[in-house]
Length: 242
Image 1 (cartoon, rainbow, N blue to C red):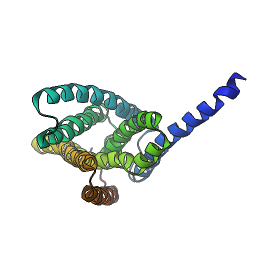
Image 2: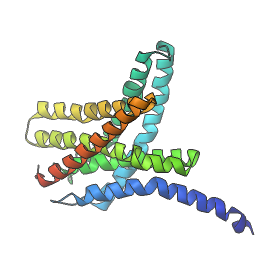
Image 3: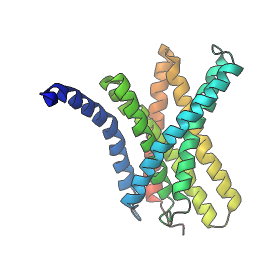
Image 4: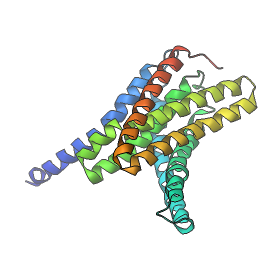
């Protein structure tokens, strides 16, 4: 009798969680299959997903603290407030948190021996982040949220991960080649470029007017297309960087 009563609740929650998880898993498989030279171990990929989940918790703490400081320093209705909120608070907190866990898990890992590995690693961390974030949103707001985020937010995080991974892989190549200054530059770009893209994504999405809706659709479409092309190009031109 007890199971009969709670079965609809369990089923509904299972559907919500599945809706939150499946898009992220699909993108992980897509990026992993594009790794031509040497596949990454399942153990490392699981650790990267876990790292992404942990990075979402770190980002949450950072966002709360920075938001408090922002509320005290800048008027909330101002243009400057929104710029700082979406670029310096949200985007910087989230992308830097991903990068911290990405570098900690992979930079000195012996499996990081190909340039495209940087893309795989960054996307898996980003999708671990998105997976946990999406479960939280979906459990709070329902199935409709899962549908919207499945075609916007989750692929968005994957795209930010692609850009992070492209520069991260190049940074590792320069590091292994003895060019420390170029490696530092590309490590900086591996955070800076995703922050700019993420901040722009959130800023346009938050505007809510008719014109910005079309801008958002165009921006997301361009982001997806460029990211898809980058994955294909980086996969085809992959090289060993031992």
